[in-house]
Length: 497
Ligand SMILES: C[S@@+](CC[C@H](N)C(=O)[O-])C[C@H]1O[C@@H](n2cnc3c(N)ncnc32)[C@H](O)[C@@H]1O
Image (cartoon, rainbow, N blue to C red; front, top):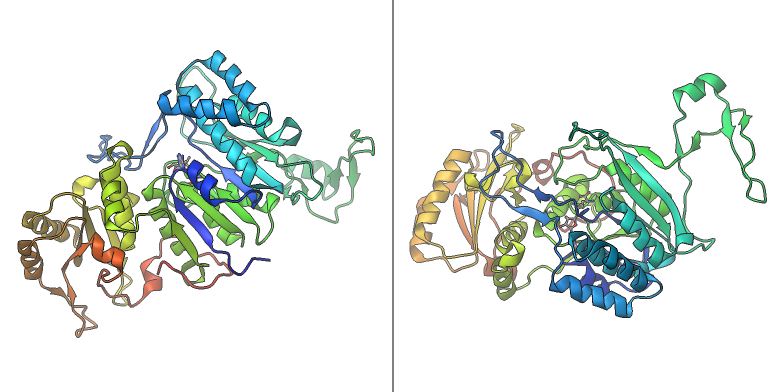
């Protein structure tokens, strides 16, 4: 049963301190983690322009690169002095084998987190670590040393197809998912899944069922053929699931819903808590919501948080259960700190976060480069034509002036937008307001008594205080978010509408 006071949680921030401060011991039923793989690739959120050139505003969704630095050294020392079991020995051995290189930095980062993940997992719980052959062999050693090799359950091969890459090797077409249980406890959750039988099996045995059992001593008994009176063969550990989901991909490393459905169905029950500490655009979160599990998601980019909020809203609308968004700036000073954090792409992080304040979608979500001058957009409907009207949004964290409002006007015309939002951290000047006022009002054809300023200047302070919000027709909210297929969930009110 779901505890009545529970609310699902979406945290912005580094998962290590968040787990340490906010997630209690033995409180989670299932963990799925899909950390960056140390593939040495910087995943660009802004997709390549058609010309093949990178978009003007190249932003890293996250930097999938680690370097051995003072932070790695500190983390390494912390593990070697404090970590339980054999992990300190393993890590020292790995360092003498690998040296102080990028892989060692990655392994050290992961070791700290795997220790925390074990702490928060219930005795009956399971963990699925999604990785690829770049680091899977090292990660398996870490998992063995933290969870115990007796608790290793499966190495799942996720086989997919993609465009051919590389020469002089076999095409690389699989990821690896390491499945461990927290203990060998008899109560651990595992729901047997079944799969379709191969056509050759069906041909040979008709509708008969093939059973291979185990004797009491654990010896395998020969396969038997039973008349078919139930479903198919047990799910095996090679999973054929399309790599690109049927919907448009929101995120470069987005995983298919079907993959997460399989994991969540197998290793949790309704009402259980699912944790994804590297949640990206939220595939595990959305699937957990769909399957009526409780959930906790953590990601270190505001882009991920903003995309997940939209994805949840798109999928469940008013049926979405309430959830909390935690760790985001709550006042102007912390917004300022975010914007000026140059080490962590602060300017872009600030933009993604500020767009979330007005429920605007990041423009790169629709493959638009920032060279269009537009940071985000909102679609709305105010008639029955089925054609959405558009609001464009610009976000500024630095100095602002009248010329920027004039530029926004031009951008609105080019984008055929009815309304423009100018979101600013700094206080706007009088000439800016004058320029905005001169743009006049948008009056919907069917609601001639409603007038909305065409250019709206909104400060971060006003938005945080809750005194202002973007003004536009909110007449058919269901229709404004129609991209993703609607899914049902047994929830109550949306907080995001
Ligand atoms: C491979 S992606 C996850 C994709 C996800 N499974 C999905 O389907 O969308 C990894 C994510 O981990 C996040 N990340 C990297 N380091 C992190 C950290 N220390 N704490 C929290 N999130 C982190 C990145 O921002 C990125 O969104």
